[in-house]
Length: 238
Image 1 (cartoon, rainbow, N blue to C red):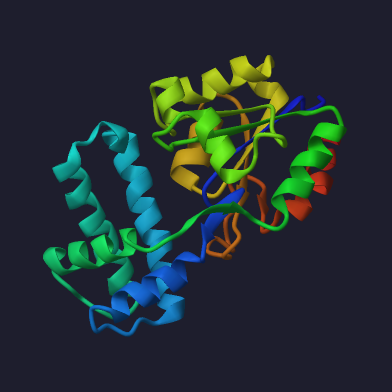
Image 2 (image 1 turned 60 degrees about the vertical axis):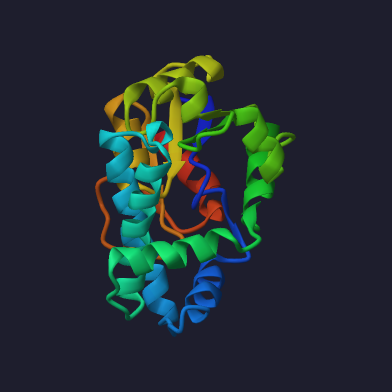
């Protein structure tokens, strides 16, 4: 069956921080007297992002108040620092996270993002983005520079639900005007993206840009969007 719609996660899949989050962490920690292990930062972010996905699956962060968010990100930062070589208490982790938030950074598309999105649309496929960000989809698309390269961007705020819960995926299918078996979703989070999409019948594809899941076999895996075209043709011919 032809894949009519190609859906993507945003953060970690189509876009990342600019400057890179490892750089932001290194600068911020140094202001607090800590030297971080660069490879440990990447590993720490992987575990911290899994922690965030688990949180959103149980109690969406978009519904947290200021104090709850501060407590969550203190724990999030603590995980990163632990892998980067430093065991710190939650108060210290929170102070470093506050310093991080004061840095100037934004989300920017990866080098392979826009060419791949344009190729997919030129081939007649509907291209959508499904994100757990708490802002509106249109605002996020404008800020990241994707407005002219996707057919829609849906956030948890738009759908009133977070990944991995079904409503946000079903909302995306409505926007794409296709059935679940006519869509694929590419994402970097096994819990939020892959398991969530699979649960509603969408074919999931794991994008593993940092090679954290080399042994993953449950669903197709790619390490860059440049591999997607060949994979889609294989899925359609199988």
